[in-house]
Image (cartoon, rainbow, N blue to C red):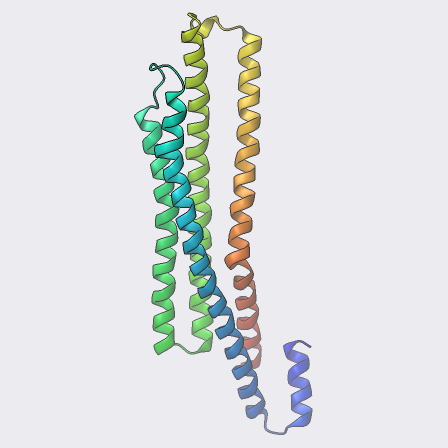
Length: 226
């Protein structure tokens, strides 16, 4: 039963419409509270996921990658700018999430003190939409950073192999070079699409559903004010 059907039924059972609207407002208030509690829970989950990602990034940047380089001759070294770019991507993820959390709890604290239900819904929805925008911008930056790292890594690998075999990169046969470029771009496309889909799914799972539910609650609240 949607809100309109519920109102019609209650109007038939009670002559005091204000009481009916008060009951509906109470119901919507409880729903909003439950949704916010679930968002709070998912923020805690987000902190756990972020902590796990930070550990993975640190492990990759400072343990796995240097260890992989050690397996080659001393001529192969990770360029400093690649390491800086990797750290930059890590920082983007951390800062984006922390900015969202700080703004969310600031809005939540203000609304707990002064906002009515409608303003609470509007401000929470606005905050989640703000985070969604930041989130997708950060993904875009991270994917660009990853793509540059990936292409540079392949290039450095090809350059190192050519040097170890005593040839110049322009002496590599066109067919071999074209195959390497094709495989690189294919893998890059596959990985970037996979990363994007995974992070998009993660956001929708943690917060996207609640944006839709909060918007629906706000719409129902506005209906009883008409």
